[in-house]
Length: 336
Ligand code: SF4
Image (cartoon, rainbow, N blue to C red; front, side, top):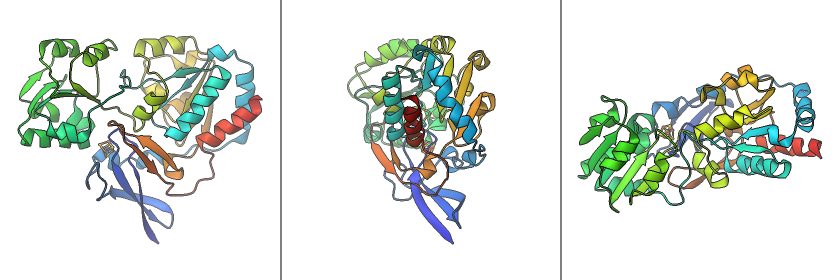
């Protein structure tokens, strides 16, 4: 029997809806969620392929799980670091935060070297802007925001782009293009209250202060679906601080993240890397313990997108694995 179920795209922070096609309860494909207000019937190729990446399953081993609490008990809390990933739902992150607070573990909330901002521009404001300043290849990496930028240009907006790539889709729609540093771009342009700066990268954490001082509305677009939700719950740290924290870590708990792909760091130097993930990735490959968990497709929850809209999603299929909330309940029980 063929069924269509709605969920959210997990592949960036734009917050598009996506439809999952199931045949006899097996996922066989996706197609865009036509009435969804964010993407209005479109998904980019990353969104369309989002389900392919979770079918490479980890094997469940209860013995491995039983070792986790023992290892945590034998380590100073200040040497335990927990990756606070924007891949997780708000409900999962709340459970992870409570665990860290009650046990005194470090929180590693890293989000593309960006941070959370109290007030951000909406997607409608981007579309209606008269001056749009774009940092990074947003049209390629976050196409359903890119679509709003293209519409703004069609409405007469002037588009200023700063990026490394001169022939990217984003550079190609620019009225003015520069490839210098983000700092120079921010210092050399005049921003006013009618301007909006859309960015998915900076060169350094210090650039974020310049962005905040720019007298414009800002729209940071993160690479992970719920990075905005994560940064509502925990303060972002810079790449340098994240590396320092990793250097001082003896046990690294990774919930649904592939941190090994984000940092040039010798993760083998950490005594124990314990990864909880719905499928194999580079982090589970180097982990001392890797435990399978439900993916977002098998959970109810919510993601908060780049413009701050919190959207709920429901499970589209069953899984015998535990969710992050269930895992943390179990860890809490064993640490008491
Ligand atoms: S723009 Fe982002 S959220 Fe939308 S379909 Fe593409 S990857 Fe998914």
